[in-house]
Every structure is written in C-alpha cells, then in structure tokens.
Image (tube, rainbow, N blue to C red):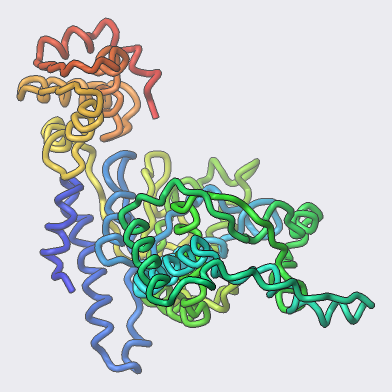
Amino acid sequence: MLTPKEIVAQLDKYIIGQNNAKRAVAIALRNRYRRSLLSPEMQEEVYPKNIIMMGPTGVGKTEIARRLAKLVDAPFVKVEATKFTEVGYVGRDVDSMIRDLIDVSVRMTKTLKAQEVQRIAESAAENRILDLLMGTEEDNSDKDSDAFAPIQMLFGGMTTKKASQADTYDDISEEETLAERERLLHELREGRLDDALIEVVLDDNSTNVNDAFFAMGIDINMGDLFSGILPKKKKKRKIKVSEAYRIFVQEEIDKLIDMDEVIREAIKKAEQEGIVFIDEIDKIATTSRSSSGPDVSREGVQRDILPIVEGSAVSTKYGIVKTDHILFIAAGAFHMTKVADLIPELQGRFPIRVQLEALTKDDFVRILTQPQNAIIKQYKALLATDNIEIEFTDDAIDRIAKYAYDFNENCENIGARRLHTIIENLLDEISFETGGKKPKKVLIDAKYVDEHISKDIAVDLRKYII
C-alpha cells in the first residue's frame, strides 16, 4: 500500500497544484489501509472521514477523486447531486448511487475473475472451433430438443432425436486426424483462418420477452424467472472464425466464473473500498432566496442523502449493501452558496473540508506540458496520425496560458477546460487541412498564437465554452 507521500506523487503525474486536496484524499486512503490492519472489532468502530471539496469548476476536483480510485483499483462512481429528487417526486432516488456503485464493483470483480480463467477459456474456444472445422462438434440444437422433451410431452408433443452427424474423419487414422488437428490449430493461432466462415449455433436475442413488461413499467426479468423451465431459443449463423473465437471465449469464461462468488466479493469490495463522488452538491444547498418555488425539494434531497452518507443498508439486485465504510467525496463550486447553507446534519457527515484554488497562469503552463496526459501531448499524438508534426515553442505555451488566464478572469471561469478552448481554436485550420500522405511539420510560436488568438476574435471563443 502506498504511503500518503507516494499517493500525492502519483496524483502529481496527472493533476497540477491543489496540494491540500491531494493531501486530504491521500490521508483518507491511507486510513483505509490502516483500518484493514486492525482487529475486526475495532474495524467496525472506525468510520471513514468524508471530504467536501470547494472550488471553481475545472480545477481538478473530479479528476482527483477519479485518479484516486484508479490508483487503488477501487469501485468508483460519480453522481450529480442535481439528478436526485426527494422521495415523492419524479426522478432518481439517492439509493441509486449505491446501486450504481455495486454495478461497477460487480463488473470489476468479474473482469478480474475472467483474467484468471482467460487461458483456460481460450483453449476451450480453440477446441470448439477445431471441432467445427473438422465436423466433429455436436449439434447444440439436438441437446436443447432433448432437454425440452419432458415439457413437450407434458403438453402432448413428442420429440425425436436427430441422427448424429456423420464423422467426416471415420476413414482416416487417428494419427492423421491428430496431425490435421495440430495443423489447423497452428493456422488458427497464426490468424490464417480468421476470415474463414463456419456455421455456429447461437442464442437468439432478436426478441426479448422483457420488453413488453418494461413498457408496462414492470421491472421483471422473465428470462431469469423461467430460465430453468423454458429453453433458450437458438439460431444458426455463418460467421467468421475470428468472431466465433471471440464469442466462444466469452461463453467459456461465463461457464467458468462462479457468479455467486463474484457477487459476494463485489459487495465486500464496494462496502470496504468503494468511493462515491457527489458532484454539484452546492446546487442543492438552500438559502433564504431558494426556500420556495421549483427548488422546494432541495432540502429533501439533502435529508435523503444523509442516511446514505451516515451509514445505512441499501437494497440492490445483488443483495443488501451497507454504506457505513464507503468513502464519500462531495464537491461544488459554492460561488452562490456556502457549505453552511447545507443542513447541519449533512455538514457534520463531511468533517474534512478542502478549498481548491483557482488556476493561475503558471498553473496553465504546467498543465499544458507536465502531466502524463498533458493537452499538448494529446494533440501532438492526434495530429501525428495524419502525418502532421506540431511543435510548440516555450513562448507559444506561455502566450496560450496567458490567453486562458485572461479569458477566465474576464469571462466565465471554466478552469483548465479553457485550454481546450484555446487549443481547438488555435489548431482549427491545421486540423481541417489534413489527409495528405506527405509528412508535414508545423512550428507554433508566439506570433502564430497572436495571429490566430487575437483580442479582436477572442469573443468568438465563447462558442467553445463547455
């Protein structure tokens, strides 16, 4: 487990500045590791210290939380507080944030389990394809007919088993058959059979019986309800070997994975390591000016969020999920409201408050060049695909940062997103005039920036505001 200093160092690779916020989330993450070393009795008594971030848009609030979750491979979900409504109103209820979190956790856990059985599934898929190529695979439709025979007999029907497919290699020796199989396997792995067509039997998903129930507002999965009685409808298709291999690998993985175990581990991972990022929480803060009218449910949403953050049991399709030890990180610009406008009980559930600062010109220079996913690096890579090599001089980068800072100061402050506005406008002509096979090199200096981003056309940048 990384130390707080190491966590901050990892976040520094993608996020410029905001050291106070990085320190707060690093300590919160380290406390989780410390808690895991305690006795089970003490673990139940130690609760996460939720964080609330305050700062203008585009300064890194969401990115800090997202990178933090990715750093430790924890289930992470970002929700907008404005999307929720009080109980009794039409809209999403606050419990859906936990349902979304457990969905993410199940997908993560299933992916990890799939990686463990990937080699076995690939081997089984290869054998299935070889059986099809050599004409030795059993007809799946026969199996389904036999399995369904008791049901058909119950309603007066009768089934007869189809004659088994003749073995193409009956008159060939076993040694020759094995040699042929090895030859086909070698060609399959080299990709020489990818475009060959084979006939496979697949599940028919063209008609979904659930659609009629969903249309009536009934959330019932009839497929799961009658999976043990009614057979899945099959259909034959001719597809390429490469596509059949992909389908067979996934089918074999699904057979090898124990979903009950996946769900148990996913629930535990969500409860102990999950991170929920509640954005725009300032938009549900109530003031004397917003105590009536269309925003009447704002305080109700806060009251509904309170038990989730405090710790409660939420019912999901995978079972009950407890939220006691989930880390909640809230964020908002708070330019029209303040944290004190939240109901006192909710304020108390976010004991750690961090103020993020607006970005300066120097911050913009660093954002353009230093992070691993720096904006200039991204655009260089994008245009390189069209044989265009762009080079930014230091004075050009400085000038771009100045334009971004000045425009944020004099217009809407959208933080680092302003850089995308500037760069898009700057490279508009270059990006449009592409397609030539001949390599092209473009040098962008301060003069080039001034010619394309002058004060006379600065107002036109409004069309790029995100």
